[in-house]
Image (cartoon, rainbow, N blue to C red; front, top):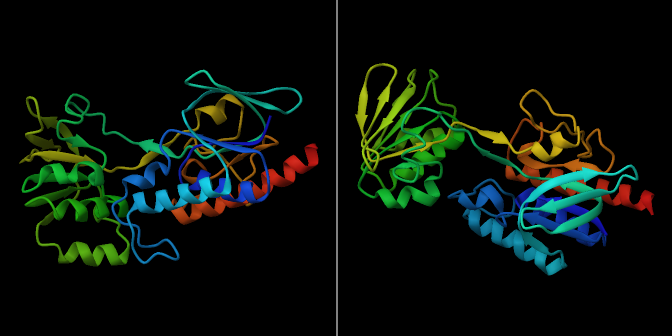
Length: 300
């Protein structure tokens, strides 16, 4: 019997594990990729204590900390989660393993939102990508398109500009929304062109991306399309337990990372916290571990 089952091995889950270990809770992390989404981030420059490091480096530092404190990490996914009348959670993984726990922390994060336009699915991994850090280097001296106008999209575009001869930012709004430091970097980039008030309607090509079509009627010849239009929370497990979700399907938590279900906690990008930042998710994970400690102490 576990005290705490952490579902998700991103920064929120890792931070929770560090504190759960210090609270001497019998804890297990189950997640697909140690470090989660941040491993695909090129540069992290806003995490206290590190002036600049890659997302992968930050993730590895967190993993090493978790392992040093003695909390095991199982690379798997939870396929089914139930709660019995005694308040004990029962989990079954995709690989058929079973775990029982007094408390659960859901820190599953999000997955990429897609455009759902002709050509996107067919040309995925053939020029259509959702990760500039992963695939940007494959298109050196090529023409690339980045779809989106958020700060994340701008950071992706800035990275792509280091590899490509030309990067087009296509955004449906009137003005891109980058943090001031990234807005300044964007204005200094000589090979980035911003196209606003436009939507992609089709990604075209034979066995690879060759061009895109916009709803303005324009077509742009390119070699790759990077899509950064937001993310959707991975909260199906919460839904199966009747955990309260908001209109965006995010888990509703309070300041103690508690949900409406006793013993079920949540942290990170899958929650209703407005500002999605690694440091925010880490804070919520730490709070969740403390709340789980208090909860488990009462169940003894």
